[in-house]
Length: 413
Image 1 (cartoon, rainbow, N blue to C red):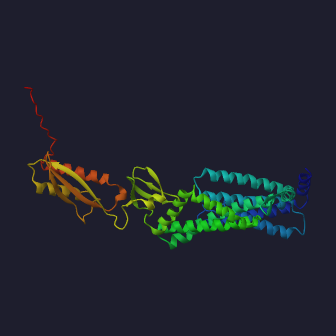
Image 2 (cartoon, rainbow, N blue to C red):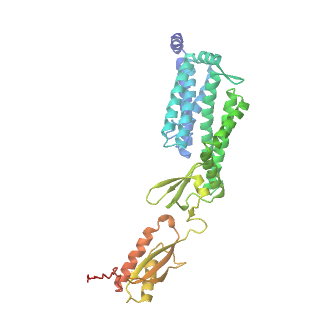
Image 3 (cartoon, one colour):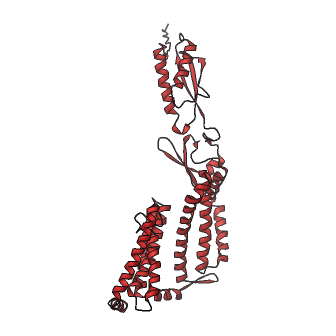
């Protein structure tokens, strides 16, 4: 209570209006700079947010101006208002940074929203304790609480600082990798699969370096991680073998480019377009909207039909039977013309009609034609060609025979 009473008394000093005007000036100047930048660049970003206020740049500039203003005025008067504003702005910078990066990296993740809310509560509580002057005492008490990890002794304060630092490093790595993928890799690497593997590699390296740095800052002996590495190796050799195989297969697929994003593939009878290649699985979407999650190991070790590899053209066929009294040459011309009437059928190589066999009910013909866009479906173009065949045969008076069967009635003697 004494800290609160002292803060209220300091706010009632004669220099409060000058301090308030200085703080409002810092906020106004920060907003003006952000507004001028937002006019030339899109506002929906980590720096500017959606409405300037919810980005990182506004509280960061306001914090910088408040620090500068404190150094200018602290020799003339006490600054209780700036002593409140600076912790609030520091917490706001951290909250805005976490919120914007997680929104960009995981736009639909409920876990990311939960992490954002938890960090917001922690940041605001820390700001309140900082304003009241209680935070240094709490940190000193936490530093007195120590835990033994082998030969190392780590305080509770180091664990908390290391955890917060590791979290900030993870978020920073996500942000840097997203910026590199969007600004650098998108212009330098035009192949989507290579760009994805480069982004994953950059993200993994940044996360590893960041975590090691955070652990070292927290006072953890990094040589002790060799024991953990041995345990992880044993786990990979037994229970995590399949998981590790899928991750390695994901990088192999991206490097070899045997399956690329946008290819039309057939896996275990499921045909669709590869829409994303994750480090553990590949997502394939069929034309009817169904999606199949295929482990990457399956794409490496089993036979996969890639309908888009090298030559995207696909041969499609359909069959029809006509009566024995029909003119075969006329039937072939009708079939070819029907195929050419479909917009998606290629003219080169052109369609061809062949007499397959003399069936029990009529002459059986097969029509073959090529399409260059199998990702748009095959049954729909086959349906268009069949409708054109039916129309052409009816106009020519050619009969499509019904199945005929001979029934013999044997009377008993």
